[in-house]
Image (cartoon, rainbow, N blue to C red; front, side, top):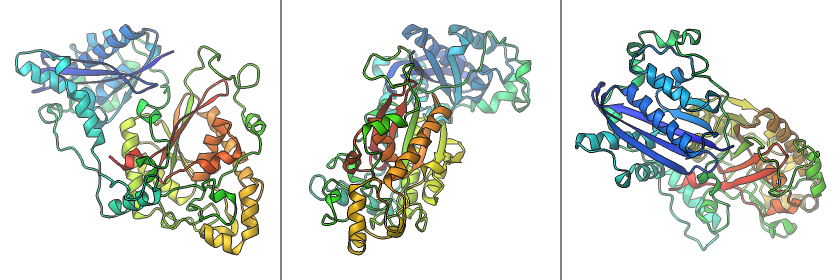
Length: 527
């Protein structure tokens, strides 16, 4: 079953006054904009214009696929609460509009979500274009619309991180320049544009008591004048990452994405033995998982009717929305640029100034994407701080999940790869070649880490089926999630680079299959 997102807005220059609406229909699976509609509707109130935008979006969905599920996202709490059945509808102009909206599609197919105004810019700009056209005595012309371009430009407005000065693939040079730019306090630029619906119109939510004739905070859903057949609130489901997320960086050496932030991995050359160069060991990640593909398959507990995940395109026709894990590596700590081992058994460092800035940038990026429904974090300070920055932007709570904690590197905590090579060469050689080997002093083997991550994965897939969850964690767990999802051999983890504050994503389906949708995306750290 297809899923669409409808983002709608309306405004009135005078309230009541010259009014217009804008609406956008988005493919929830790809993030692609499918429909844009806007109209100047003459003299009306903000709330009536917002309802007209909602109606236009639902009509467009019905034209595309009347069987699709729909997530309506609006910055009008009034419309969202009334259409969800929690607030009473008294105003005579809005009652018939709400009734029509409830009848356009089966209520069980539609859910409503309030979003901040800054996350509804596309529809807002369409509404303003419609009102501008009305002021000229015209109707909105889709061929002349710049709403999509202006919205994309605003989303890209950020600090320009200098390109790496070294040769292609010089990740260290890129990381150094990114840190230097952030250290100079160059923060993301903010738009100075004031849209007409914000400057010229009264905020819809401020008129809720006046429009309904009641105190909205005391509204009782049992008093709603619309019937349950007209308006039903159902549990919201999400179908994973946007097109932008799926098309993100793959972390390849010469790409800008790979060049921002400290590298987080041991390359195959480094993994060859103690004679190779120092590892990128801040939350170091020479990760290894169970020894054979059979171990990966055995670790999966979500399977189809046969007990095994189906392979290829011949799976069941409707598996439902996947559980999507957006994997966020925490921001830099003071140990990150020094490439020191920093696991669960070390000093538990906090984020550096650079790391805090990275956390704010990734929080802003996730707020723009608007797909996160829950946030879980490793119990270590750097992950809790990173998760806290995101949670503050999204208005969500952070749940601590012990299974997301980093590997314990034993006596190697706080040392560089070179220092470990010098002090414990035999232990290091054994550790690089065998996932069952533990670091000096009884740390955690990568096989043990993989078993822990697999158990955590299975628990979370069951708990968050059909949901999109942000997991704020570390290099080793993230690479393990990806490696298990791919069914790749243990040595594949030596070929992954994972930067600080990077995003990756894996979706888990009901038949036991997994889909890696994103890896090492650092686009939020650059324009």
